[in-house]
Length: 246
Length: 259
Image (tube, rainbow over all chains, first blue to last red; front, side, top):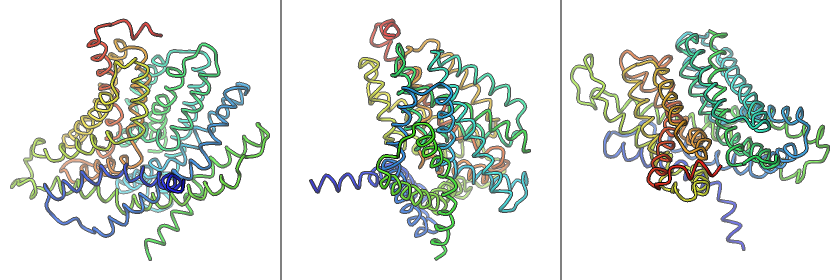
């Protein structure tokens, strides 16, 4: 009894260790076999890795304790009985809120601001960098919220997913022509970054709940695909953000 | 001491990051569903964990994963390490260690990804066993690895990113037309699940480091884009894998008729 409880307590820790292990193995192999030079600041690096493991475990543990159960039960109750307007409102809020807190996006936005400041795109002050990073994140969050709204309407109407995806890519190609070169890389990357630790479980719960609540929908086909849309709209919106800012 | 100070500062910042979800959850719970939050105490403790975890994680990124990616980029592109006497007429193939490293990081982090295992098990069920769990995992991991190799090669050569991405999507669209319908949504999603919270910062730092150290490249224009490659290529390899599996099973229409 006691043993299984311990195992359960430490499961997030093991999971984040497992996430980090391949990185550590590959980097150590390269350092020892190929580069054969001492890594600078090894103590700092190890402390940082420890922080990453602790942080990721606490984060996931906390999500599983509070946010995931509530969010999933809410997603299901909205999918079952909510009026369309409330359902869409909730979908938007869910996409927006989870994306703002997405750790990888916070990290990338800060890095992008750093690079933009170094390249003299924005002025090199803490304030300018912070507002650039925040603008980037809120743009991405807004676009994920809209993607969820679009995806929910799609599930209800039963539109085939690939038409939306193909249409989206056509839009991306057109916008790319007009976007400043400096933003294109960040925009394309932000598509992959948004769909991660917090967003995926909650958004999938909404999609699968919705698809199984509506007669004649297959949760397998209709439930997924929200994520695919949510990694597409940020590309467009970040490019538009770049056109406005630069 | 400085580390603790950074941790405290980051911790304060994370409150702002988590605030929107808090407002949404409680707002909708009270205003629309009109019921109290179940297990309120547990939820509050959970949120404190989330805040602390985010602070530690972001601080750890600054201390470890970002510097690690940049150091690797610097070391692997060092002319002295590559044994090149005249750095001005360097050829893209001289940076072969960069490509090998990108492949190794992409493959190993993806094969171990738990989210991918869940997707692979589902795909196995939907396809009636035609798509094996290990086959799909290998396909996705290979996709990420090849994507990162091509992505680093693009940074080295400096070709415009959108050529590759738009070309890639054209291939995905063409594959979609011929792929069994059940696998399409899964294939599209497999692009998103591969880029985990640990991989994204490391890969981004690698790209920025490469763009910084390779002569003629600028981090601003060439540095980003690796994540885009890593999310695009798995779609191609998964679609290709599904088509090969279908073709091998020798019943070309059974999968598409299921729906």
